[in-house]
Image 1 (spheres, one colour):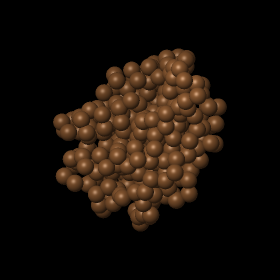
Image 2 (cartoon, helix red, strand yellow; image 1 turned 180 degrees about the horizontal axis):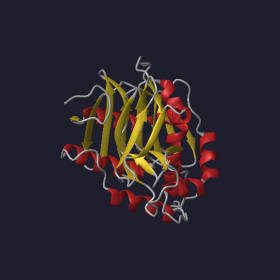
Image 3 (cartoon, one colour; image 1 turned 90 degrees about the vertical axis):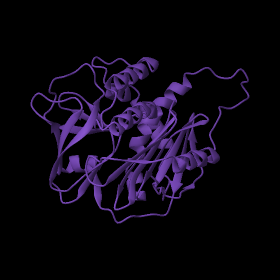
Image 4 (cartoon, helix red, strand yellow; image 1 turned 30 degrees about the vertical axis):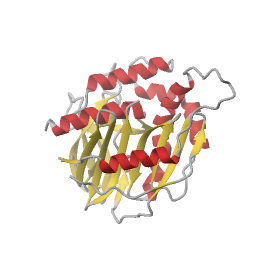
Length: 312
């Protein structure tokens, strides 16, 4: 199956330390109307709760009381209720509807109510975690087992990164990793600002492009830019801990626009397969061997969110 991905132009990279952020431009501005999940939660139009009093780790219940659909993004973090979760896939929730959404736990040591409803943390999973998430969810979807992740691998990656970054967390919560490095995340966000007109971004850690996110309109990209960056910062902080080359005159390796083009070409060439969507629209999944995994959420044949992640 062929999915027509947007034809994009790769802009000049914005760089800081080991991170390079390439703005992507395609000139599109679709008429698809939606609000982002964090905006809906803040306004009270969207509520997210456990599916029952006892709860279910891989599912949450979303109610959209608003007049427009709501977009949740793969990897975004929801905090509260019995334990913090991340979205397993990007989902469009119809107006005036209730929908179960597939999630993964990113707080292994808590299973008790902290609040009745979830809030948005404003943080996003790292590309390393998103790789394991997307890979396992694709395998599950294609086996017709739903949008289930390898929960054990998710916990393992959260714990691994906490250990690598020296983060202490009584409940092994990913949110504690972000809190421990809040100042550095803020510093990166200030230096790697949104580029006007960008409808997407490709991010490299060192010389390797690790992920691409494309949206249907620049306004969405602008709103989620800082949130997406938060996850990349964690991987960048890990990269800073790696040994430097003996040649102190040599700067750190950096990715170039041509590297992004190659990954975009690979994504376009991959065989895409249609998957059962969770909410509105259509969902497609693809992979290139074990290294590159991609997904696309579309509505009326227009891509709403396309993401590509690469093994770390």
